[in-house]
Length: 95
Image (cartoon, rainbow, N blue to C red; front, side, top):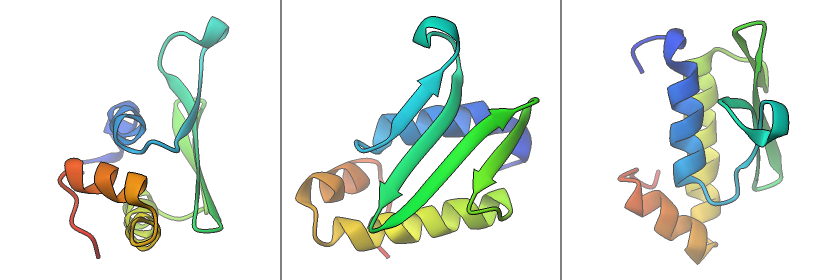
C-alpha cells in the first residue's frame, strides 16, 4: 500500500477477493463502497468511509489492520476450502 488515499481501491480489492465480505454502498446501493464488514474466525473487521476518512474496527493504523485481516484470513482458510481457494487465487500466501 502506498498511502491511505487509495482506500476506495483497497475496499474494492478486498470485496472482489473475499467471498464472505458484506458491503454497503451509497444511495440505492450504487456508487462507491461506504462500508465493508468481515467476520473471520470469530473476529469482526469493519472499514467505513466517514467524512472522506476511513474508520477502522479494530481501531488501528491501516497497515496494521490489513496485516491482522490477512493473518485471520490465513487462519480461517486452513479449515474453510472455499475461503482457502479465494485466498490462493488472489495470490496471497497463507501465513
